[in-house]
Structures are given as C-alpha cells and as structure tokens.
Image 1 (cartoon, rainbow, N blue to C red):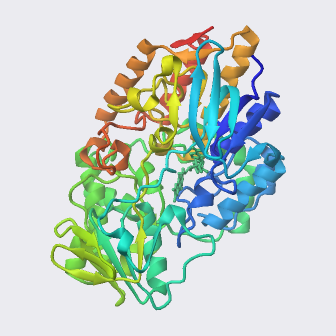
Image 2 (image 1 turned 30 degrees about the horizontal axis):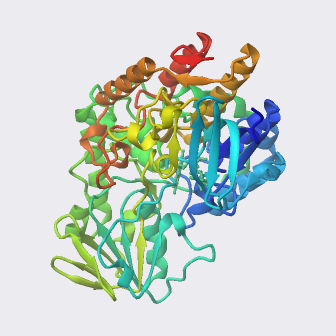
Image 3 (image 1 turned 120 degrees about the vertical axis):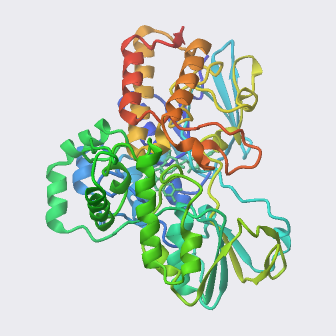
Length: 532
Ligand SMILES: Cc1cc2nc3c(=O)[nH]c(=O)nc-3n(C[C@H](O)[C@H](O)[C@H](O)COP(=O)(O)OP(=O)(O)OC[C@H]3O[C@@H](n4cnc5c(N)ncnc54)[C@H](O)[C@@H]3O)c2cc1C
C-alpha cells in the first residue's frame, strides 16, 4: 500500500529535528514532522519561564552529527538560557532546510496500526489523517505538563502560569505578590529571578531539594577555541561516559578517602559548579547510601552556612531522600535568595495547601494573598506525552492498557505488539539520566540504521518480541536496585503524578552499558525483534 509518508515523526524538539534529518536527508525517505507547538524547539519552545536555561554545558548540550554546525555555532556562556538554545534549534532547522517538512500547530491525537497492511494511520486535532509506514515518537520525556489538581484554581482572580506553558510575551512581576509552587530544577531556577522582580515571593515547598551552584559565566575566547579544536575527542568522551558528559569519571569511592580528602573534593567541585559534583566526585555517591550521605551532609552544611535564618535553613535541608535520587538541580543564588526580605518559604509538607481562593491560597493553618501563582510542578514524565495520544497497535490493543502497570519496552525503543513504532528516549532507556542530546542522537541513529537494515533485507515490519521485552523490563528493574532511586518520591518513579503506577522509568544501568546492549542487538541482526 502506498502511504502518505514513509516516516512520520511526532515532535520537533532535539529528537524530531534530528530524526527528520536522518530519515529524509540520510536515508532519502519521505518524512514529515507533526508538531503541536507553533514553532520548533520542543522543551526550549515551551519552557520560557524566568531563569530557564540548561544545566548541561553548552558545548555538549548540542548536536554532534555535523562538524560544520559545531564549528560555526558560537555559544555565549557555560549554560545558555532558553532564548539562546531556541535560537540554536531554529538555526538547525534553517541550516538543514528542515522546515519544509515540519507541520506546526498539529497535535497528534491518535495512531492506529493496520495489521494487514502494516500501516499506521495518524489523526490530528485538526482532524487530518495521514498514513505512514514507520511512526517515530519524538514527543519528549518532559513535555506533558503537570498542573496539580488543587481545588479552587478556577475561581482565582489573579493570573496563574505553568512554567512549561509560559506566555511568549513574558510576565511582568513588578509590584506583584507571587506564589511559586514546586522546588524541582525549574522552581530552583525561577526563584531567584522572580524574587528580584516581584514585590514579594512566597515559595511553597513540599520537598526540599539538594542544589549545587551552576557557576554560569561567559565562555572565554581561548577556552572556546580549545573546545572547537578538541570537539571530536570531547564528543567521544560523552559517548563513552555513563551520563553522557565529557568528564573522566572518578574511580574513587567516597568511602576510601579520609574526611579531609573527601571534603576537599567536594569543596573543589562546589567551586567549579555544575553536574560534575555528581558525576566527577566519587563513583559511588548515586549507588551507596553511606557514600551518598557524605555528599548530602556536605550540601546541608553549605545550606546552613548560606541561609541566615536558622529555621529557614533547616526547612531547606533535605533529609528524606538521598542526594541525586531526584533529578539533581544546579542553581544561581537559590539558597541566597532566602536571605532577601521579600522572600518567604512555606512548608506545605507539614501544612498542606487546602485550596486556592479568589485572592490567593489557603493551607490548613494560614492564608496567603497572591496576585500571581506560578506552578513549577513539572511533567508527567516519560510516559505522559505518549499516553496522551490514543495509540493502538496490532489487534487494536491500546498502549494505555498495555502499560496500565507501568511501561513495557525493549530498550526503550519499541513495544511488543506495536510494530514499526519507535520511541525516541522512551521509558526503559537511559534518556533523562544522560545529557540528552547524546542519548537522542544514539537513539535516532539506532532507529534509522535499523530501518536501513530492513530496506536492505527487504523486510517491512519489525516489532519487539514479548520474551525480549520481558527480559529487558526485568533488567531495567534489577539495574535500578543497584541505585538509590527507589528511596525518593520522584518523577523518575512516577511518584509526582497521583495514581501513576510507581515504576522506575529510565534505565539506570548507564549509557555505556546501554549502548552495548543496543549495538549487540543490531550486530546480531536485531536479536529480540521479529522482522518480516
Ligand atoms: C526546563 C528544562 C531544562 C532541561 N535541561 C536539560 C539539560 O540541561 N540537559 C539535558 O540533557 N536535558 C535537559 N532537559 C531535558 C530536555 O527535555 C531534553 O534535553 C531535550 O530538549 C528533549 O528533546 P526532545 O525532542 O526529545 O523532546 P522535547 O523537546 O520535549 O520535544 C517534544 C516535542 O513533541 C511535541 N509533542 C508532544 N506530544 C505531541 C503530540 N501528541 N502531537 C504533536 N506534537 C507533540 C511537543 O510539543 C514538543 O515540542 C531539560 C528539560 C526541561 C523541561
């Protein structure tokens, strides 16, 4: 059957743009991207809140597939802000002439597989229908917005915003009493910036978080020149490291050094700033509780040294979960902001929010008058955007039914019973635990190599076998037991969404091991997949 497209790609972020390039320009297939937003960029199109910037450093939070692109693009600073990353992704779309095959303002609502013809039919909110042979989900791990259901929101007479649906024209906080709910990475980025503008900022905190200074700074020309000269080697390091970072990982255990030596390492990395504190300090801080405690205690000491009011400092000190068992934030003056006269921290763990009123918000014990409420409450991570579409595989089976007890995939790439559907950075892949452009390029390369292999072999249909999928799901769970992730109520385990099954979502065995699994599968003629 002649389909409208060979490949339909859903989403125009880092993943979708690269997938279009690979399928259209490298494989020469008829490919098209359908994107809900009215611009490209995905995460960086939607998340325009004050303080939004990446936590991975610019020179590796970028594509590696084109040396020309790498050489011609100039990043201004260590962690570029949202407008700069969005400009980069727009540049990529223009440079590779991608726009002509991207259809914006087009939300996919359903995708149905015809078992006989082996064709997917995709329907959009605008009631269009497209048929395609291959369907590539590039819908993003962190793109299904989570607005908590707090009674009374509809009667609030002020303005409210979710950080990932921020108005393009911005929000003026001058003279406003602002309430911010959520202290994950986003809340931690937004707090100092909003506090600097608002009349008063009240931060409603359920769970305190461990944050390390980012130490953002302009890129000095000499350093930048060195990076450009050494890009290939740096990229290779990102592919060979567990987290997709160009650091030589530490081989030392936090338990094998003296207290002085350990503290000196933490002090040095605190000064340097960024994710290196997690990945470059000791190899066991994310895996061994005693090792983790040393890092956690170091950060708590820093919080107590920084925040002048002892009661506020104690409230900001996390004690109920290991460091980095939740997504580790990095910040610019987060803890310092609580020394400002116009900032208040409210503990909604001991005194939960009861309702939103016409003029603000009420907890069990107090009322807060607010002009603006900002929800920094994150996402229905990793499965949300997939399940918000009605995806039906062979025999009409709904993905939502298949995943009712948690997602089941083979390598996070395919789902048994859903032939020719590929999920870029899907659940069961390392994705969000890796510097994501590295994870994305690896997935898109694997998928497009697989499709090229199918063409070469003259087969048109691929799907994960149930046995291989079961084995991978077991392996993902077993690998997670080697980490401390089950000890935190985080989005990594779906705990932020009421009713969501508590299941580890990303693969925690590390990118390097994961790549080996993917490469081995491919080398064995896609072992674990049925091709026909
Ligand atoms: C604030 C923030 C900061 C981050 N910082 C970092 C960082 O420092 N380092 C890092 O590695 N990662 C970071 N991430 C993760 C980030 O999401 C990835 O790095 C990367 O941008 C993901 O790209 P993507 O294309 O896979 O998904 P996305 O960028 O999320 O793009 C998915 C696209 O799919 C579209 N879409 C979804 N559903 C549909 C549908 N049904 N129909 C049509 N279109 C649809 C969405 O509109 C969106 O544009 C951050 C995430 C956030 C939210």
